[in-house]
Length: 455
Image 1 (cartoon, rainbow, N blue to C red):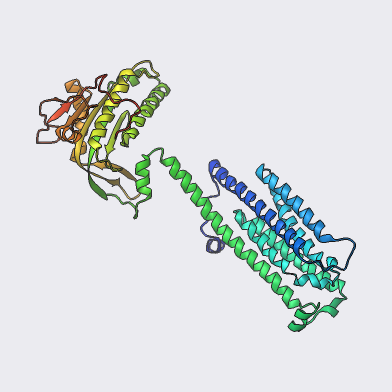
Image 2 (tube, rainbow, N blue to C red):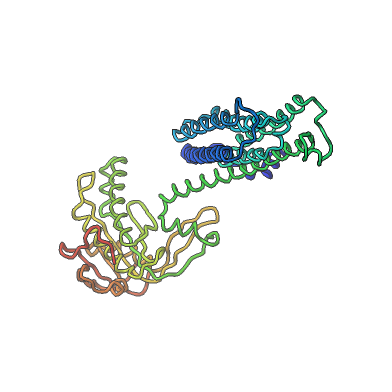
């Protein structure tokens, strides 16, 4: 029952065991809020001082004037608080003291009016300055912590009770009390109901703001947690795929897919099994990180998307996730640049890594496969399988780049692309119809320049 009521009032509870980075993100937001609160309070005290300075003086007293002193004290306190906010030095106890001081100094300011203007104490109960109480309470809603709203509202309600009690005590007990609203408005008489209304308003505004902020806080924590989780997970999934999933109009379901004409490339490191056998696990991980970092940069430069990692192999798509009218050309440029890296780059284990590439262009399906509880967003179809088979066929032909006739035709002739060499038609495993394939070998004069983007 308690948890149901809590959920009804404050919304779904957030995870109490938040990761440290989530807590840090929330605390950072809180610090920024305190800076804003400090500036608004400084603006308010400036408004108070300005109004006091330009208003005509009706004081009959030539002695002590408490209003300037109260304003000056509050101004200095606000400056000190703002300085601490910028140094992130506002502790919980100081914040609590600060909230009480905010309301307390405002109450002192209101109380001082009857002395400043030589009027009965009930005079200050009708001062419009009481409306600033609601501003000070609402200011605390800029910070996602309802405790300080409750402290501000509680202090304000208690303060007004004290001010009302002071009037009754100072003005001769019940003699100042009236039940006539007109008399209350046109004299210094005290209408208890009017003061109770103010206290009720303060309490209700405080309660509503506290509930609203608590609901917002829980939503904020869930949002920050989800954002950080999404950002972390995007490191394990292509950013383009992550963006496609998060911006889908409807939740992606298994089996849903979209048919697109694209170029698919499979890559694999030659002799990877022999290399990994000679290296310790940590050394192998370091080498792969170096390799994937450099090749991923090339793939991104030419608009490709790494759809899947599998050991040392990659499944890369062009025009499947992000639009690219020159997808075949950019795929070929990617393969050539990877070969250029293979020829010059010495990795941490002391040798080069040669990469075999298989390319094919045609219609594929991109979408989610799996179950409702676990999905993989990938590409599939016959043309994907052909690209995979061509990568393997490089072993047979002694080549490092093999592409189908469709890719060669879609690529066209360009100065930075070497001549293609026709290979015999092959019947790719799993297909009945033969496939005409071509190989290409990069040369020093025709290799794409590292860092040059496809146009």
